[in-house]
Length: 171
Ligand code: ADP
Image 1 (cartoon, rainbow, N blue to C red):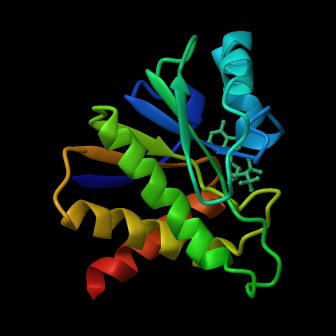
Image 2 (tube, rainbow, N blue to C red; image 1 turned 135 degrees about the vertical axis):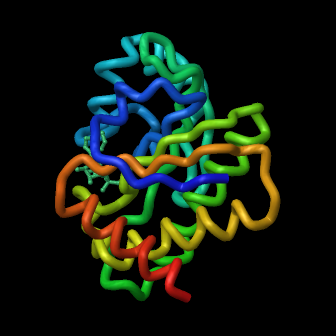
């Protein structure tokens, strides 16, 4: 399994599954969630309504509708609340749950946004290290997933994930 850090708009990625940094209602929101719903069309919200929400750190899958991706995997990340509310564990659980769900649905290629580092205010450097470590550890366990892309929307986010990957490779 190959992990790639790229810059771009996740709604344009022709992968088997893109991950949505959703909220627990799964009924849409701002940021990447809003962008995914706009690009996928109203059918996505209609399917999300049948799912009755999702707990923080877990994941649920839908079709991709008008997106170039076949599936959307929705995961509510933790809201940063100072670090003493299991935020790190929950963020790790988001990445792991999405990878497991992608693999269970026959995906080979998955793209993630930077979960929780937007309006949920998880510190970027720490979030990047958790994401990179969790994805690489998952890959080491043996997986049918071939490519995992971390899709960074801006330069600061890309720099943080590049640094986290470089740090992991040094170890
Ligand atoms: P959260 O509520 O989990 O913090 P946000 O959507 O506010 O989620 O932000 C998560 C990350 O997604 C941020 O780095 C934001 O810049 C990024 N983002 C926003 N739109 C897109 C997009 N179209 N593609 C990829 N990343 C995006």
